[in-house]
Length: 444
Image: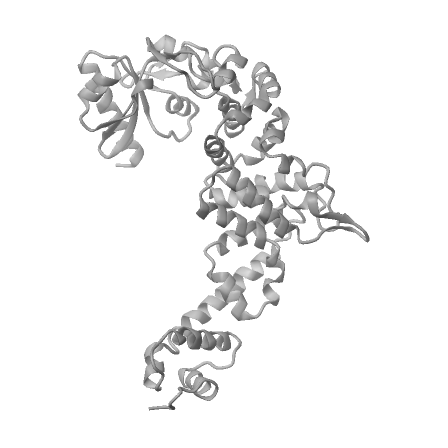
């Protein structure tokens, strides 16, 4: 049984327990939307008129993750499900969350949700759709529209402005005019949202396979200027046409994002977004347009942006490394093999190659360099496999070398000379070491 089937089976079991106890239980939100669109559905959320304490009493394996807001996490067959009590929200004072909630019926619950396409319910047994807000019609028309007045919805939770962009781009839906107008007017208020929540939305946007239309919509709504002024600054920054016939830096970045498939890693996606972020501040125009060492300035800027988004240190370091090194690929084939091996050993090397391919497709579309590098890398790795059979620490001890940290240096020296083609057998390698780095007391 697939995870999807297991997930639905568990959700049906939870709903059956709730209904047997006299409560309503419906599938809600994104799961219903994706089912109607024929898309792969994600987590199944359940909405009920059971109070949080009643849900918790029915399911011993549960966690109160937001009991004050009516949300209990129920674990069924090792799969977590959010079971939320129908509610309407009280006053919002911080543009993030309500000060209180009131438990209500399904209709009132639908009326407090963000967008009509996310406010649909489904009967888990009959699969009948329950629609109080015209969400089915908006799904058919391909429209992202708020439930109720747009400005009120965004004032309640300003992150909804960014969510509107995400849903519009990822579903390839148009944005309702009232929704678009409200975001354009309220975009400066996005700064009241925590960096972590913004980062979570950007992650979903960039890995959706629809990163380019999302960036265009961020620009159209004014959110790009507010959230990423460094990217907004790319607009109008011309590039040398012989290398970049596609146009300015912003256009190049859009084309790079267009290459990102659904499910791409967040680190690669962020690197594609930021790889030329240093160009606007390094542009010079003399004999031609140049961006001297833009990758170094860009890596510093990328570091600041990632810190501002509270991206984890591991992911931030990976993104910064990709931005800093994306121009080094043009020199890779000229490097000494030992240096090539050091680059290949970096955990981000495969993503660096993919960034190089994306970068090329977004400019002159010539990916031959990346193809040459990949072929050369395969040859070097085959040589590394052979080298592992040539000499090791045990061989050094047999030749009279005392064990210690210097073994690493000796074996590294063998590796360097091997890839330079100095020798091909164990005997040649040992002879080389004994001649150039003899043991202090000579061979035993």
